[in-house]
Image (cartoon, rainbow, N blue to C red):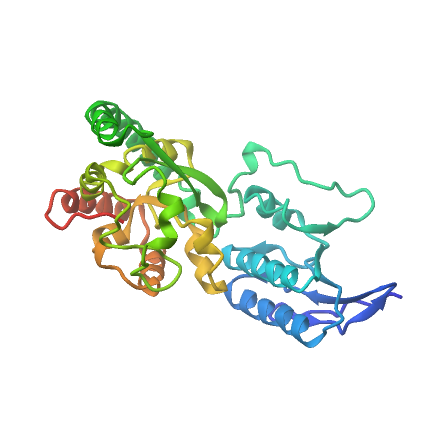
Length: 341
């Protein structure tokens, strides 16, 4: 049995009533032409409403045939709805995905997460070419700014030279303390939630991740922070206080996963706790420094303050503003107020 898809307006989200399709009970949610924060919040509400109101629902089809633009909030809504459906044993299928949206999903590695309903002759997956990266997909001008990228490359090269010089005493100090690994890598999220491995000089004990559950979180919301974290080594405290532990991140900047200036790079665990509007902070690349760095990163205790600073950065961004934040960061690092994030 087939049910016609309800026609949606650009500013409206329309949901079909569930219908029987063989052994399954199916519902179709039609998405408007753009899926940004306002539409994304409504979209999430509609999907969760269907999941709650229809206990016999087996499949929910997300009709994206009219959707030509999606930002990080839209991606967040899709991911959140996907997880909600999973917990209830409901299959979520994306229908009629246009090339622009499919490209965003491919670039952020989310294409493998979702199930697509493909038309005859339509490719199962989209091959992402280098020239497609960030073209017409970005939600913020900083992502495609050639000036910002040039600043990142030059800054990263200078930073890596500095890192090479300072690495010798740092490596010796770390090895002398406990003989463990020099570098620490952790999965973080970049633009639109794309995952990458961030590098740092190790500042914690070897089994720090396993001991995390034993440490009290002193920050509200998804962030994790403890001013007197017992997992931090003696040399680690010095490295964090001077931000020397972050020097290897110049490699992340050179590779394009990060920028010299941007938002704080979140972990996947943090993003799993985000609400749809909070995904807006992923509209730009994360940075080695940013608003939080020059505005008392050690004193930030509320996640809402992090969101506010991240959105302020996006609002105020310019190449000159990036340079100003870099200068302010250097001044902060040489002041007594420098501290770890």
